[in-house]
Image 1: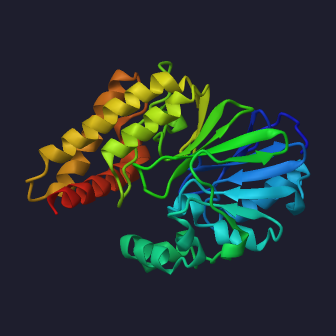
Image 2: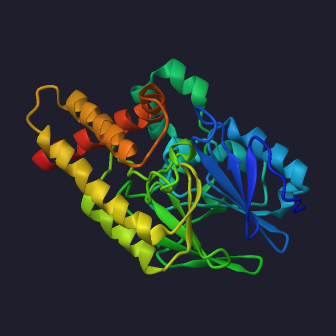
Image 3: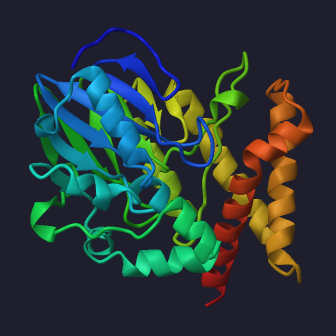
Length: 321
């Protein structure tokens, strides 16, 4: 890989042989994938959607990467903003191993259930526009790492740890060279436009349907037990001082639970949770010295408030069963 230290609208070199590549999902700086290179071997961590695949190949051409160099395609979990483009990408990388969590593998072999579920949430027109038909992946090219298994990429070691809480089919990857974790959605999200002089604004993500606050907090603490120096968020980019951020994140998981429980008997529960989450975001961002207008904040976080509310609503329903 040529390392020219340059940035484009869609990619950024963050050091240690790691580039952030914007997936193009919904808007700029919404979702990232990571291209990691070491001694001529390449791993792609997260695949975005079908629209990410041409972006990745354009990036490869810019950097002088050949398809034969790609050793691994890795998804932290199988939610479609992370893995929707995996099958299409793998079609064009015939010598590559696909790395996925044990509990997500079957959905990559047969994505019909994923497609049906997402179509029910978004509607067929929106699903087709954003994701298209999901392409299955042959189980023979899959690697399913067990907890704490290490894969090598060139001279670096990638350690996979099981991190349920956001989803049961979620792992995170510790990279010994950068001393950083690729955290998918387990370590929350921190959109760059909400970063201030006080640092990143980090919040949990409780997308339906497997949110488990106890498991999520345990997973966050397990990440910190490795003493990482940085985390690479899918939403969005590299952030440092993860130990400090983890305390904020843990407290905000508790706040989400408090908001959900407050609305448990609300006849308009989903709407109530969503409104309370947005009010919480606005209050916290004011204390974070965010200079964006209320309208800009709502625009940036509306989708997350809605998805988080849906996940919390499902969680409340599961408690009642």
